[in-house]
Amino acid sequence: MHPATSVIIFTALSGLGFGMMVFLGLGMLDVSGWVAFVFVAISFALAGGGLLSSLFHLGHPERFLMAFSQWRSSWLSREGILSMAAMGLFGIYALLWIFMDNRIPVLGYVAAFLSVLTIFSTSMIYAQMKSVPRWHTPMTAVLYLLYGFAGGALLTTQVALAGWLMLALAIAQIVTWVQGDGAFAKAGSDMGTATGLGFLGKVRLLEKPHTGSNYLMSEMIHVIGRKHILKLRIIALTLGSLIPAVLLLALDAGHMVALIVILIHLVGLFTQRWLFFAEAEHVVGLYYGQR
Amino acid sequence: MTTLPKSTEKKLGLVIDLDTCVGCHACVISCKEWNTSNYGAPLSDMDAYGADPSGTFLNRVHTFEVQKENKPAQVIHFPKSCLHCEDAPCVTVCPTGASYKRVEDGIVLVNEDACIGCGLCAWACPYGAREMDAAEGVMKKCTLCVDRIYNENIPEEDRVPSCVRTCPAGARHFGDFADPESNVSILTAERSGFDLMPEQGTKPVNKYLPPRPKADIEETNILAPLLARQPEETGGFLGWLDRTLEKL
Image 1 (cartoon, rainbow over the protein chains, first blue to last red):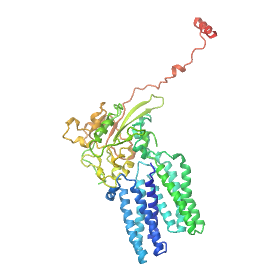
Image 2 (cartoon, chains in turn brown, cyan; image 1 turned 30 degrees about the vertical axis):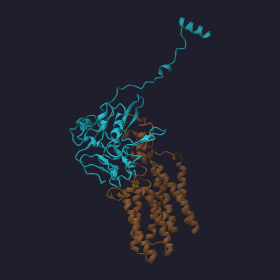
Image 3 (cartoon, rainbow over the protein chains, first blue to last red; image 1 turned 180 degrees about the vertical axis):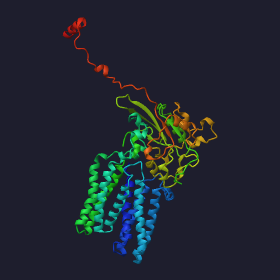
Image 4 (cartoon, rainbow over the protein chains, first blue to last red; image 1 turned 90 degrees about the vertical axis):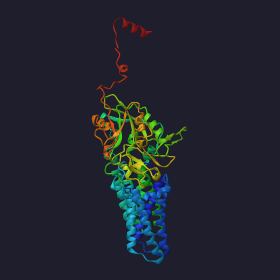
């Protein structure tokens, strides 16, 4: 799949923002006043910035309000509604916290729960795609949630918790790759089933439908950069979760260490998101003799 | 509403005969001509006369080569457009309700005024039946020529999808699969029509008819006569001539 910058930024940043809201909503981080304001502002900038970035992916962003209407069937619609609900409720919680110094636990818990659901629904946009076997697994949801929780814990200074979550994330990431590498074959689609001609012998593409490229090929058949996949996986794994886990659990993390860990995690996170799209193979590639 | 209807009154769709299709691409052209000038936004071309031309098409013809071991290869032209699936994954993912499946005839359509161009439906379709128009920023797909098949302003013989009307080989058939006596139902039953990627669970309405079996001949190696060993020694007059000429 084509790794669109706006979508990578959207999933990465909004995951972090809602991850922060989870821990702030649960009443962690014992601060108040301006310090509380700074943390709340960062969470809103990440969540809101990510959502705004997703609008740049649209052909008609001015019609985005219509996207809140189909929650009965569409995960994208659900994500839109849940994100607004989570941010709205967390906003009220944060205002009372910052200006009245009054953290209402129930309000925070509900906002945290909605934030979890938001991250989950983001993951389901991808996990629901049967046409992309690598995404079509519960591990996609596990991974998105763990990235949100680990990053959110880190950004809300829950050092030990963040360390253990990073470790869990590393394991989940490895499991996802191992499982994902066999997903396409396991889904059972090949050029024989795609054309229905498998019973006649081995199928190969003799001629593409057009001499030029097309939307399907540029959007679904992204092969650039696949040759560097192993290196990129190592970067994503070590920077995204392993090194942060070690630093957080082994060192007595002060502000400086935390800042460095955040920067390292961000590089790993963005590499992982790029890979998440670039590695994913859509079955439509079979009609073009490609993966 | 992007939830799918439990069942539809009719199941309109196409039968595509892979035995008959000659790969002329006339259906591609007539589809583009009709649909660029009728329902919804036109089907744009990008850089049409430049170095890297591309464009929106609702119907494309791929060509495949199929070969069994030690048998001659077989070339099969393969037109592909929306299959108007009963369990269409492209419809349920749509966040705005722009994508829908009609209860009355099962046609899957896009209401372009409500499309935000997120592209999710194109991702959800395993067949590559939906293409985002680069000029309009909305999703385009086969409408089964919904503006022809019910159109009382055109002659009756034209009230079929444009691709079906134009096919010079008669490889495309249009009809109602819900009616077991319809032309398409009978064709599918008699010629063992099949679904594309049944493992995706989309329950496509459109069916493909397999190529008829060919005569069972062995693969021929065109280089065989050239590679055959020539006799090394020839006796008699020709042998003497060969040796003499060799010496010259």
